[in-house]
Image (tube, rainbow, N blue to C red; front, side, top):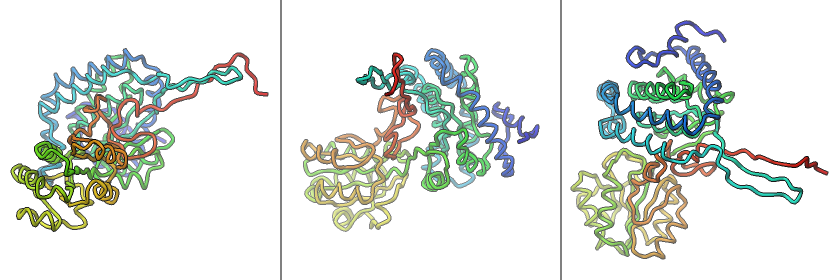
Length: 444
């Protein structure tokens, strides 16, 4: 395939304001993605064999640059926010998109935390010896080249880039058009840090077009992409799952539940529910449904709902909830299956822990669920029988986060059953190879 001069220059331009957002025809999108793949494959060998010291040096420099260049990042983010408002983006999605000094510091700290974590590459998982004398071991290795497709979350740019660098994976990022300027400014800093550490800049690349055709090209790039990680709304996840020829590590809806048992401490339940729903309504770990034990309706329900109302949360409840809360509106069947990402919560009455487990199995997305109870036996049943990636006891669902799990950051919360489940950190971005050592051993 021949590359036009314009395409080559465009791909080389990672210098922030110099590059304009453009819509390119499909054939150009194919050429751009193919060239990204060529560069990714060249960079992959160097990163796969890079020392922990070199990778950590790049990440430490990236953290320093993010802090020192925060004004440039905020300026780029302001452009994205202005465009989002003009396009009528919802307040919740604007919150996902927004960067401020605290969030930029959180990004930088996430990189510092990843530096402090053990390097999984080269770690021996297990070793055993066969009767014939062969010694077999399994050793962690990078997956290879990872594509991350995401929407309106510029922090994913730093998290995914840093996790892939440390785990030895080249990453090609395709952020949403809403966060294009923010993501580009962060990628520029990551690439500068890689170069300073003596590693290829192309270990981290950003698809330099908002043309949706580029997503389609990534999804069929099985000759050089080893894994696709989509992060975004259901329409994006559905498209990637249906069209991708590359293995997908998916993150479906965060329809997270909090079940309050009749043995729950009322004060604890009130605070956990308020935090799980209202700390940040736009994150995937925000509680969307509150399940209340019928035996606790007269004692526990109104303290929790009063707190939610005070915080500005709309309550959509079943008939028994509405009998006790005149502010609640009627919940429909659709509400039990909705990830609001807004200050709205659905509230259902259930018959004890068995009813809660049944409701979650029917309506949940296998993301994160929490039980509030002082009864250890009830808690253990919930933890054992609820089939979700993250199951909690007496804790807010907002802890569904790689950083809070001690992983430094996350590339997403996987609701897959294969390979990785829950927060995807360094270890989850590796696979393994089998190393067999013999002494002239022959198979009879």
